Length: 495
Image 1 (cartoon, rainbow, N blue to C red):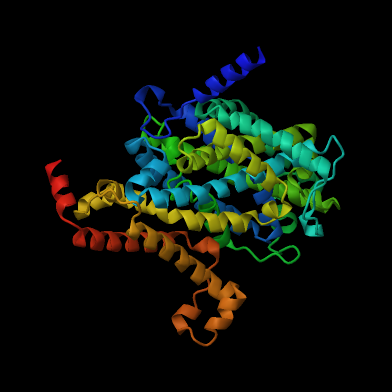
Image 2 (cartoon, rainbow, N blue to C red):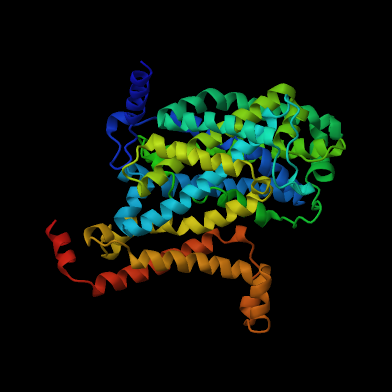
């Protein structure tokens, strides 16, 4: 009897087909409501309880914070709508199978493996966020990385296992179930964020709308970094608001999501996530963090500050917010791993990714350094998205062959490989010459004046790296196709 039930369950899981290796069919496409809900659910999320307070801790001023978010989020919306969504609608493929066509299977496997690790890391950060709230009613202390705690307690880790298992189960159910979950949760989460922030304003001296700007400058976004944190300016905030999802939009990872869209204009649905989440929710969580610290509290973990501002509803919101981000993140990780394990069913690799996600959730340093992690991974993966964009839209106009690796039956595209490595090393060098001690010492007295005068943070390098990546890939591809056997070009003309 039990064996029959087990077989039935496995058969049902195997039937959860997500068009992993072929274009999505027209009958499976979704409209605006689905994408508005997905972006709202994913980006009004657990990270907002981490990143808003990080801005406060880095001493950004009120003016720089509000203007930086306004511009950076606008650039992110344009990136989704004008770069990512049109490609997703045109190809209807996941990013992994689109990369396979232009980069070859070897580079696609490398990308997928690296990307799956990062996605599990980010999903783990969301599990961490959720557990900081779940732990409160059980009186289990949250880890304090600032105080030197690098490993949570055993009861805390057991909670992480339970929360992570729920998230993995939801991710296994696929795109439609994740979208439905977001539709239910997103509207309520917005209200809790804003209600919690409004509730604590009086505690920091804001008794009317006219007081807000004064209090924002004096008590919240003071312009003074806390502890050893670096100072953030308008450019840091703008760059981070744009870069924090660069892999998804400029890096084209979300063509995996937009392959289900009816029209490319649904890319503008990202505005609901950016301006309710990465604008409104960051402001609200920054206010909550400032009020929490002003009350004499320490260790501003997401669960703690949400409970302080919005009571039990705030704590529940942190849990749900962690889930609505971790679910699609783990879903993407499952698809990424499946590229390297084609004989495994998606539900199996998603559960395997869930195990790694739970492990990373138990590393407090991940959330404490989330801004740097997001910055590095955005710059690392972004060049491959640039290659997809250029290959689909620009190469035909230049007389170059699109999907060259597939048509030439190459196992790896050397233009994509060297352009990816070269573009990322460019960013690492520009940032590292002033921030890596070993590189600064190596270049001391050897830099030309114009290079020495460039002082770029990671968060400033989105556009420069994209330009370098596109330039290198186009030049290398032209050389490759010019020197290759003309048989492939003749076949293209015949088609």
